[in-house]
Image 1: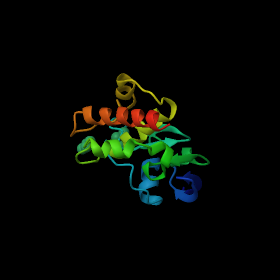
Image 2: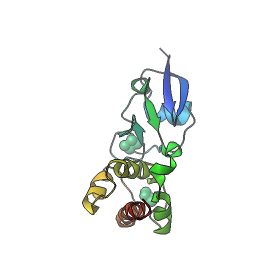
Image 3: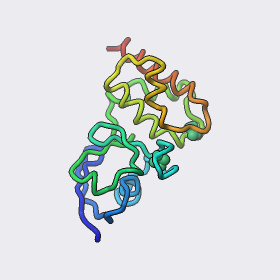
Image 4: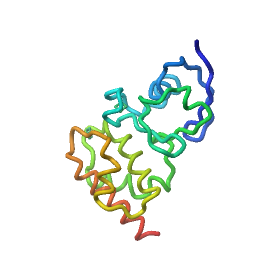
Length: 157
Ligand code: FES
Ligand code: FES
């Protein structure tokens, strides 16, 4: 039976009608029209659907829409300037992505890391994005870009 849920998506409260078994990924993309979380494996393996739920990264294919009722969801579209500071520039400058399919999930994971660890080690960056598969890049330019963003922040702080 369909039910209404209220999910604050990128700062905007949205009342959405969902089926009990609709996963958050589908609720975001199909019901709410927020397309950055990508449909990959749909079983928690690839990280392409990663979003922040109350500030913590989750795989939105593993969360039911009804579980997000009353909670805050942030996708790449909703990251603020502070969360993105230096990150977008570094990712672009270092050609960190090729096809870009993994990018929304990895940017969410990187922003979460930099939010609580302003001076991450290479290993911490590797760990933060370990659950996000990228078929194109070999990860090194992505890791370099996250470290460069952290460095830029520390210089401009
Ligand atoms: Fe969710 Fe792959 S689509 S982890
Ligand atoms: Fe293509 Fe990562 S850039 S999957």
